[in-house]
Length: 258
Image 1 (cartoon, rainbow, N blue to C red):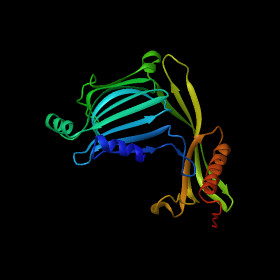
Image 2: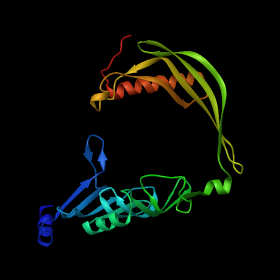
Image 3: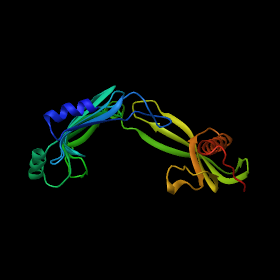
Image 4: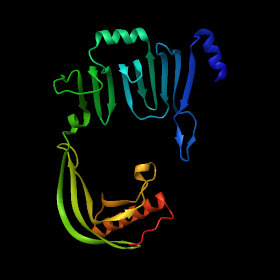
């Protein structure tokens, strides 16, 4: 790194290079730089810089040109699984040109994205807000599955509702389980059905706080759960297992006495 910065300063006296590995691993460890970013600062006084981000293991597809994208005055992005790249430019003269010709501080984007069986496009659309007055040809999408199979319709049917006692090591907690059948169907495709349980706890079940910040270090509670289940006992069992798992994950020495 020192050699790189020494070489850069011969060309740009105020120049500086910096990079960051974003490939986090469990235990605050960093893996290979599969995901990362770097900056080449050319002039601190005018905020002139070049930036480059990469992700070598992605599942999204897009290509876009954006102005006023975060710290970049101009950003070019391209992604095709499994790789994605972003190249940004920050320059005083570009910034002054954009301020003169674009009203407000919002960014503008020209691009195309493909995800969730849909194609989304932007033609000089606003990156910070959306308006129903914007014509679809400038900011719209086309869903391939809806076009071929018809629009998906969702419905629910109540099956059963029952008051239950949820057994925990320290005692039982009262709650209500509602069994529902969820249905997804398309005019030109098979119908998919799923039995689900929605549990509301009359007595929330205590669990340790997450403990990642000052506001969540105290005790917390499980107030309910929605999960796939075919019977009420199965749903209660999943709630018990989920709650005990949270207790062990957050503090294996934590105990609760009612």
